[in-house]
Image (cartoon, rainbow, N blue to C red; front, side, top):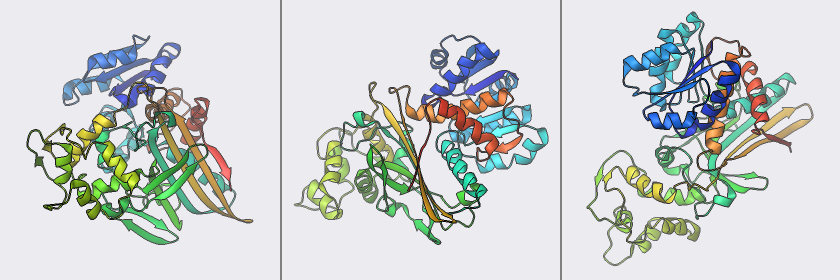
Length: 441
């Protein structure tokens, strides 16, 4: 086996492509990078030995399957909804499959056939999901091996800005898919705390935050992800009293973002058609009650009683109290809000991003409760070589490399929660400077 096919040359693929392209010459491999934009794919490969680019519209079934048939392993960096289609092709054509995305129900339906054909399918091997699984399972397995009981596990992750690039009141810019950021949390979040099931509806989500601290970086808002409960089984912690997985934003972000949620400006369920020339002030006013005398600012303060100055300042900075023109007038409220934010939260060439992840464990030992915090902080180089691309792409690239080298000898459908996967991947990530600082409290 020596031919790798990567489908998708987008922003999150940069480090994945570099790692595997650099291995082609020394290891006698061939790398094919396929993307709708041929020039972008060629630019990413930079004419390295053993590599070639191919133009591909993934809807072109014949060409897609022809490319897959040439490969031994296929890596899908396409949008998540495309993975089952690519995986089905790989299953039929007898090819191994890798992705950084969540293992879908459609993928699980292929499990028996994957086993029967002796193929290796690996999902959730990026950042979150991926590094979060591996680093957590390392601690979980070590505790179990000592006969200890994990009674609380909270895990938070965020893609943010390096401190020197926090040049706006939100301390935030888009480092990944803007649409996913705008729509984040739009389903009831579920977790368990001290044996009590907790459900947080979307309109309460950004009020229910926890302060998470990183040494040298300060405070962050942590809010619950959609589903923490299913991870009890994934991590072998079915009876754990407290289990929560969440997302991190800078302190104060969530209170200001909640203003948009309460107004309905993150709604993606209906379409608007605002008049041409509509200003941001008029767009905001469209979500406020009519009043013949009160200003937009006064109506907002009346509707959102807990609106404080830092939250007000964040809304103001985006231009919502000015006569700046709305950049998009047709679409859902969420799409129009996204169009505004894509201008103001655009990552500039000189900006550096930052990945922060923290696991918080409480473990019952023979000597009492032991608290462990395990923290990852990773900085990007610039707006292209981002920490997001590095932490999403490198675990996947390392997994493929180890598999092709025969250092991972597994078949079946997997996510990286077993030692045979997480131990060698974490070891290689450590060599690349991606590691956790563990502290016992």
